Length: 178
Length: 400
Image (cartoon, rainbow over all chains, first blue to last red; front, side):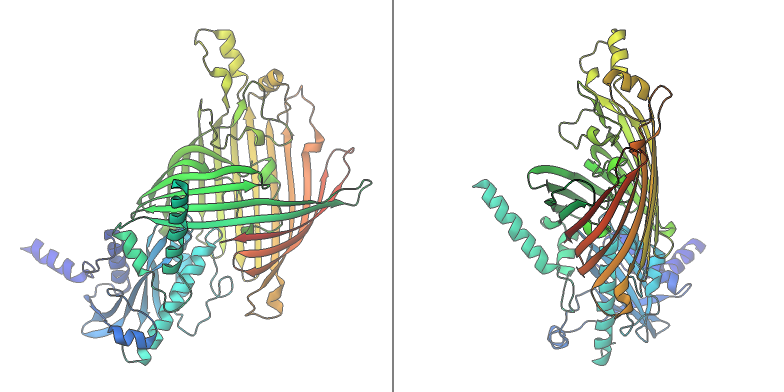
């Protein structure tokens, strides 16, 4: 009985990513871990924000299915989760950006990095540099964000990805979606 | 006909790819390709390339020198993605317009982030430039000379191995088993002036008689800094073993004299913060069986090689306008390398192999991946009979 109760509690505490079909199992695990680490010991729910196609056209950009979520804790929206892919030299990497309620960046993480070169961007030292930035922040490589030698293309691409997400978030907020 | 249709497929494939994976607008939607890869639907070709076009002019001594204008390197990369975890990369090089080489050709399979398997024609991870030799990634028209005379850049051999990352610790490792240098194919290949350079087998019907181990660890946990520790250990390969009877002691002993054992260690760093950048490396190599090898082949290979360089640069356009997309990197590099750092007692140390090069120059970055370069180089060595050489270089470097 105790074990069942324990398992139940564990399930509740674990952020559920099983419905994000396009992510690999490992990517889901990493996403789960990242979210659970941000809000420790909290029961975290996510709710997908769906933008109708017509509205996407008006906004001027696409928001794919299973790429934008509200993070809900104790019935309150605590932030937003964006999941996207971006290109490194030869391949795509999947990454997540967690935004605070004020749309500043809480956390950026790389979920899957596929090719060998440039994988250094998965380093926490590099990714931490995005924390607290928002759509107004300058994110020039070598200036505001220090790159990693041998991973310049991937550094640049991750910056570009983060920029796109903060800008999308701002436009979505202005139009009442976030 | 078949070739034509393959070509069409490649061009068509790459153009689709470029369209889908466009990067810099709010409207891009790389998800399509991602889903395509993840679901493993169909393959994916990537095309990439780099080029280095140089002008070298020696000057300021008692004789006239013609300049050299050279399409030094033109390279095409083809990458092909087989589903989620497996891809194939080739790097095909045209050197000096007329020489064709394959610089990389390997399959990589990603088992997980800690462990990737790779097999084929691999770059040996030693120092900085051998692995990152795209001309827009280094200062100066020409690659540093240590990455030529001691590390025989572009050093690539056949083999297999593993690589992986430990993100939490900001560590990356590479570990490969490869075939070694060819030291003997009827005559000696390794020599004093540039050590192993003539012994590279480059995957062209390589001879394999003894596996060599190549490894590197990179640390990137400090902002702007990357540190590398490389090691290469093994023995050279020799045709003298082919068809040898195990009982023929004289022949085995002869063959044993045609190989050289090598241990090479390299330490490197790259640091870049704001407009300032610095990099450097130290390389040390120790060769065994050199006396027997030189006696048999008549070569002048040294027992120890040692070299280092240090380079610093600054983007001076930062003074003028912060948001300018152009960069003008002024840099200076000091190199010292000696392929006769140590020789055995009966051998004369050739002082002209103890060289010091100074390079100062500028690189104007027109766009990410396109740089105009100009520099001045002074070459000296410890031999009093060698005249100092002066050279200016100018060139175009692109990478896309």
